[in-house]
Length: 315
Image (cartoon, rainbow, N blue to C red; front, side, top):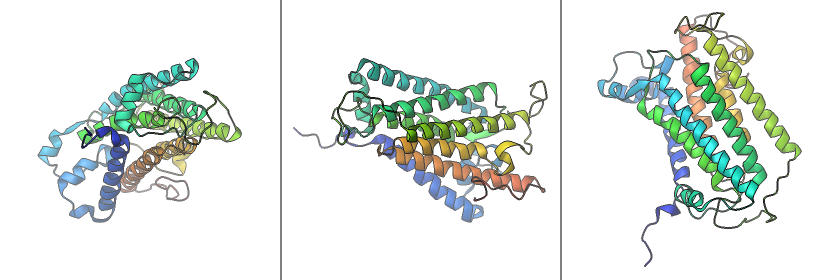
């Protein structure tokens, strides 16, 4: 008997990212054009942190808000989930055997059982190493560097999206990797798990590291605005950041987030799920950087005119 519907025939990861992209693009467009005509529910839900809604809040939406400091929670998850994915990948490629059946069954459920091999072990190893380093650094930053205001809130939906993002990204990277599907490679040679570094891969790693390092510097600059010279937190107010890429854009940490995911996409360009991950990150960071830039301009009368919102000298 043929089942009428098999959920494993649907790529749930792609479905999640497409919905996130559509939500951000549609609501971002509405906020940018007709925000004053939008219901308070929508405006309050998608504005948070320093650019939160001004005015009388909706009581129901307020009940669904949590402290912005809870961002730290999903970086615990991100670090552990990335390490788990990295560990399974390393075990698979070191032993030279396919991934455990429970891993493949899980990927079949989340990313369709019709998956085909599209990325090489080299590409997968690079991507998983880079995303794991990013998750570990963000865990360190949120727990030991950044200073969260005790007064700022975020909507529960924004909090949950953090978990969805890191969960989906790790699954997407492994979903079409050699050794992680039930079918053999379509266009890739079957010579075992071979690792072949090249100049383009080396350049990709260097670009990722540059973005990784400067995102860290940006977050340190923001954190230091609330600390004294000894590192003690003395304020929770927002101040005007200066130094490094803050001299040319309002949100260098968001710009470099896009750069890092662009590198991951370039490394895994044959992976059909990575385009959705890339589009989601780009659209989300664009919306948040626009709101942040708008807030800076409104709150600092002498805000440097040469600073763009997201892309140096361009946007």
